[in-house]
Length: 119
Image (tube, rainbow, N blue to C red):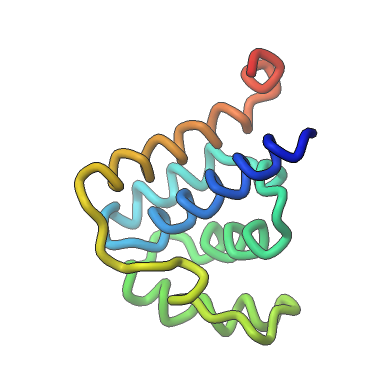
């Protein structure tokens, strides 16, 4: 994997996690997205751990997810984890919402080995 691909994956991962932790999607939709994404598409270890914790929490409301996530990630070996800092700004524009959803769909594609070979 090239440096450019790693940078792209990190950006996709960050945007995907922002969406998964947001109020923009319903808990059931989050669960469905998590089932379609393989944890191995996250090249950053912290992103992978956050994703796995989000996935393991299941269909909880985003508010509750945000309450539980910091302690769970800390227990996985990231004592300095700060969710708001990790996710970035809370508010998003319509254009940013599109980008967040595109990131999820791109990671879903990358989760399918047949799709990845076409990329």
